[in-house]
Length: 383
Ligand SMILES: CC(C)(COP(=O)(O)OP(=O)(O)OC[C@H]1O[C@@H](n2cnc3c(N)ncnc32)[C@H](O)[C@@H]1OP(=O)(O)O)[C@@H](O)C(=O)NCCC(=O)NCCS
Image (cartoon, protein in one colour):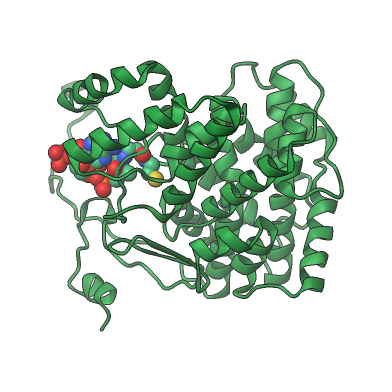
């Protein structure tokens, strides 16, 4: 019996937050917490970050293998055909208040998209894969459009020949990014693409387990991602850095936060007990962005926070810590960091949804009931 299976059998059933409880099998990804390893369908994340690209990784997650050149060309063509979103969905987004949180607008837009896809309720393997490709193509367009619309600007049409990373930065800013920025952002997308049964992916699988549509599963996942303990952490990291203001303020700020039992966003992890392998790359990106801008202030401040957190709490930074300063230096608005997470994680969510449909069992755990029993009913007038 594997360690994981033993944990399940010995029933950490009432474990708070289901920590360490194995609820099923998956080939999509594995998080090896004590070694700091992340594997997508057999491939180490470091190898993929160094050699691959986001579209190829999407293919890998959905198909359990890397594509041939013609398969990748074919996928890119399908993704490109999906970049544009129905005009009516853009109209729905325009109805959102200017101060709506972009992650909420994304969730609403994906919900609306389902009504414009006549195949939405067809959850056959073939169609679900097509929906996965469609949504992956559309997410960058939706997130960039949200930002344009709330700033009173027209959405920018996607470039049919550009990849998702280039297109996102182009549609956000209205001008083509440098090759290096696009490459760096593409690697960020690879790093965020999947992470085993994190809260939003588990949510997606629970919804898919009822045989609800891919869209419904993804809408629920976006809701789970939006929380500050999950995908919402990256925005809060940058807010914290801005609040700290200067490297010299870090020590006192962090110590005060910890003394007040406040959590420092971007630190700690439910599974990793050592360095999060994604943080290794993002730390480097934050440094590079600072050096290229001629101002490493945010990187230096982040390093100092990292040093104090390690000394005071023994906690490592997670994926959200250095992605915050990286995105900030790319000129991306703070509240888009969580939607950007979704632009990447849509591939992992849908890979898990495909896997769930392929061997489905309704997910229905039990709760340990700790309430009263046999309480006599008292009529409302007598209470
Ligand atoms: C990610 C997270 C939810 C993992 O939770 P977990 O492993 O179940 O750990 P817990 O929340 O139970 O915390 C365990 C202990 O470490 C502390 N801790 C964990 N993360 C901390 C953080 N970011 N800052 C300060 N203390 C932290 C807790 O206060 C707790 O201390 P205590 O035992 O003295 O009460 C948690 O680390 C966290 O909230 N991090 C900040 C949010 C974040 O960055 N989320 C993105 C995750 S990728």
